[in-house]
Length: 348
Image (cartoon, rainbow, N blue to C red; front, side, top):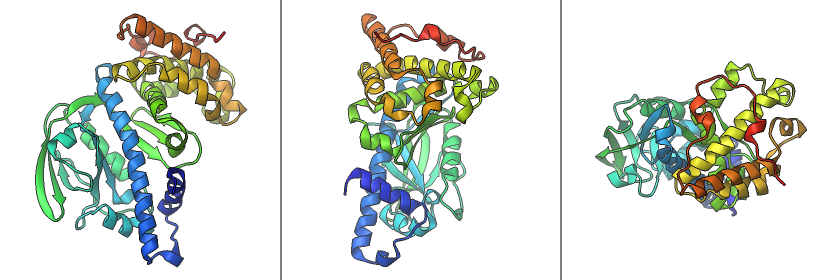
């Protein structure tokens, strides 16, 4: 089974559809396990890149959270028909509904001794979710992350877990990180978004984008959060959807896209990623990301975006890897003005 087939199968499964004909057979259980491990692998690819970027960018973020290098999941985010298989595969203990999906290699959670499939009983004194919704929902996971994110970003956090039936207590010493939750959405189309607290990408990125280039779009979305673009677009009265490609909306959206492009190169540099991957990503994959002519109106041409990030990478390299931040970073609390032309480098 390919990663893409596994993701597509999981999309159907998580929605609550049941393969009735094979639900109780050993082959079905093996297939369930393969799908669940495909989801875990995808989540951890995103979580590892996000953790690295968020920790490196922490000095640039107005809101910080404890960087744990820990990916949690809840039974609530799976369809009701899948929950028993999920509980069994990921070893959720008792009536608890939160578990460790994975830990980032070398991160605080791993150093503290946490392992994947530890059932979480308590974490940092925050309220743990109780009960399960009738349909799959990430609301409990988002609420839990928000509560953990509100804790002091560098203060040790006590956790109680169960591993193989044995209660354990661990103490994690986090590092400050940008306050952003990373979420993988199972979908066969290219879509990436940031709402100020969340960076979400679709599984198509993991299926189609070369591993070495994947940090580029994730850094771009994190840059949107650092620059408060979602809130500033709302404050400016920007219209989304079909209207985004018309009138003053075009300038507002192009401004935010180019600013995020430019800042993303600095985020890549801070995290130790090659800065040239931004130009390679936008130049190679950019045209595949636009769904429809209207959206293409609200985004600058990808050949120009590639030229812009390439120019920024050259500036950073010329400065020894630590170039000054662009002027617009200091204005991240000010209203958007829709002035984007001077930010863009035109391709030859």
